[in-house]
Length: 275
Length: 360
Image (cartoon, rainbow over the protein chains, first blue to last red):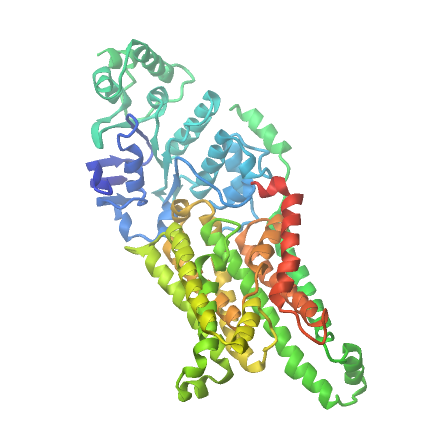
């Protein structure tokens, strides 16, 4: 279980996160949504300890601040919104960096499988800097995957924190990446992802947290959070968006659709939107 | 993606071209190169003492002449070992700085270490005579290197303090602070030069250009262990520096203690560069050219880069030293001039040849 209590974070004197508390459970895909500048990335950075904050973030019942970087690294991997790379590393060399220090670097089973998972098989020897933005983002996802390759180790779930994992991808790869995250959650791992696309959120998420102006406005299953009145309050939403979203819910429950989450009631598709 | 396609792609994917394996093999080749160059350099010098004659005498059991013993044991051997230590120290310091600043053009000179060492040395040359007699007696001939080492350390510690707030060191602040401190330091050096007499100016000039001329067992016994210790510790930072290439936040998420990593980098560069500059003066280009060549040939992985940099740096410096003491023999050309003359064009040539890779 990931739990954050009373998180407040500031940039200089400006408070960007106001007393936020949330939980996310392993085995589920938790999506963080909200308009630009609503505090999503700040929240993720606080959850991963990247940003100074007040309040407590605990992973598996342990306060993250008491854990060493290497301990945390065995429990969770983080995909930042944008990454830079300083030297001309190849794709496989970048993905290998996700392996733990104990792992023999010459055994590429996991890095190659991770590359394959994100649709980049055959890219191992390309120079990272020669890749397109979307390819680079998927290489980083492969690196994250190889860091937490097994979603559960000795009954302890591992976590992926993804900041806009699909933002620079085409629609096909967006679905691929969401399926990778979905599969990780289905195998018992925890996924916390910032997603801008409400359709993808509706299709893949088990739990949705809606941010607005540095506060959590709503939290719950997608059918209740991605509801018209709420969204109208935070986004400027119109009839077209409403119809797109109802379609996404239909896709989710359609045969061969991505999302059947175990505990929840069957998605109420359009009714949740128009309710 | 459909599973069948994935399987087909895996089957088609070539095995990763293993630069890491090649870079590890390079340890051996570079060590052999260093060994051969080192033996060869023992036979080269202003005096007519050749390796062949010494080798022949060792085989036949004939005793060496007094002259041969002095030249080999008291002059060439300490000088060779000093060259190895200084070359390795400069190249590894360069690689560490480049890893820390995430920039292939970084070098210890950038953060004021060299400027601090220069201030210490110039201060000792110009003002040394006015020190109390007891201090002079204690330091003996080591006053200038000692002052240079202290100067290098003092600037590095000052800079680290300036750039560190609430336990976090800002690399950007360090870079900018380093430029400011270097400017300030060089102004003080200018002031001292203004005060210096002709004899001091000459000594100072020679020191600034760099040279291994004064190498002795005494100096080696002080600088050698500092440099060796720094190199051994630096070798443990390789993985962390690789992570740092992805940025500080990601390095930390990968499990590295980034603040510790930065502290060790600064500490080891101050120790290695400080000791190297103290005994040999300002020798440029090794710190930039050596890691750069290696990155192009064997890749940027710091786990192998640091070791290879030490080996290649040492080799290049003793080659430069051989040139410096034979090209205008019996006089000596300052080695800093040789490394700049050799390093500059090589550096440009690499840039032009591999422009597409360098752009990366």
